[in-house]
Length: 284
Image 1 (cartoon, rainbow, N blue to C red):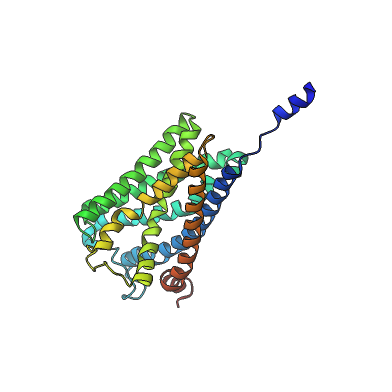
Image 2 (spheres, helix red, strand yellow):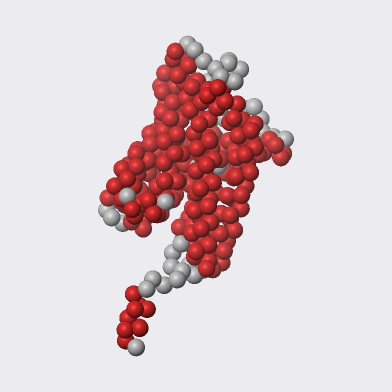
């Protein structure tokens, strides 16, 4: 009898069904985000990174496709946005890897070093964006300058907090800040996905060329604040003792987000990301 009780006490207790669902939907959303982010990283490298290089070498993609990234008269702004975009590639590639628990437990050294690279890239991306805003400003003027500056500062704070808690071996807090950082990082391509979806399904209603329409104003914060709210719900839903209502709501929100992101990524690749990638890879 005593041996049976002792053996049962040593066994890990089965997780409640909603707790398991939270973990699985979180993993599914991270996987979809990684696939979408990988495609977007290729787009940045082919379109924006290529334009930065072409501007410096005098060669390049067709002028009608070339984004206004490299400007010799605005060297600080060009370098700032270049660092922001290239660091974004690192973030999009490494982000989901940081969240995979088996990799963290099996190769802790890899997790630590890739985490340092990830956090450094987040700080560089945030700082590069701030440099661009200060040197040149955004197309949407002061409201967009403020919103994007808040986003850049949030990247820096989240990255710094994740590193600080990891060094102090406060791993629960470290993991929570890493999740928040990942939620912020995905905003860089969600911004574009959401604009494309709005053009397709609403005909661009409320959007103006100067990015000062009602939809543009809403988008100043919509591309990263809901991400943070969902990340916070996920962090809290994973804790022992979380209410079933919080867990169920988090599962539904993450599952819906994963499905929508998968569909939108498919259409966006066909209509926007694919052509520049094909041009860089195949000269098409």
